[in-house]
Image 1 (cartoon, rainbow, N blue to C red):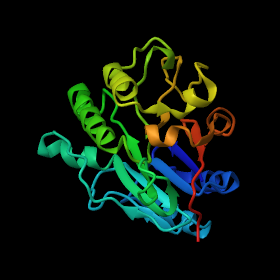
Image 2 (cartoon, one colour):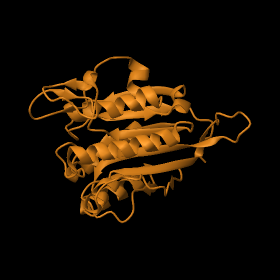
Image 3 (cartoon, helix red, strand yellow):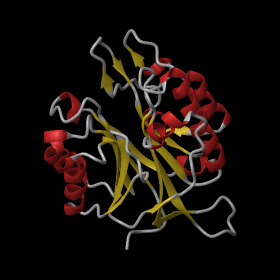
Length: 267
């Protein structure tokens, strides 16, 4: 099973046909996009273009009036998980933060349960766009968002789950510019305490790859796919597609593609 995640920058705008053409060439089963604009004309164009290329099943957080959201699209049926992320934020920030999250399951794709006597489990995919420190919730709101992600990751640690997207956070190895990325303690807890693994590091070790370059100079590794312990051994490939950013200028972020071995198959 192949999944691609990508922050398409400000809804994609006039770049949408080229963005979708790249996604079609990539051939992923599931697409997870950040900075999709649900209530703009560009959002309608993006959803329709994805449908025309076979991603007919699409999910996002409902009733979000926010400018940017996360969109998951699949070639096989998706089931959106109704569980609330449980964000501890003031009411005026809650809608903003909820739009940056979508959790889906793909019933056609299964992974063996940790208990060999149990039925296989469908793969859970969570698309995430963590707010930046300068975004509306501020650093405190960003930390609260991360607290909710960690609570979710703890609940999903014994299940086949992937959490991927633009995390606007990083460890020292993810920094290639003058700005120090924050929420390091959250990332360390995700790795060291909860046992989740960064797909890129599983595949490529400590190689430095930067998926975004700031206007102030320097690159940063912001875009990740985190694998629950159940999924780590099923990773087959993890590739950052830097050419879509650096050469073709389709976004200010690189795309990230991963392949996971699953036992089910698409109908």
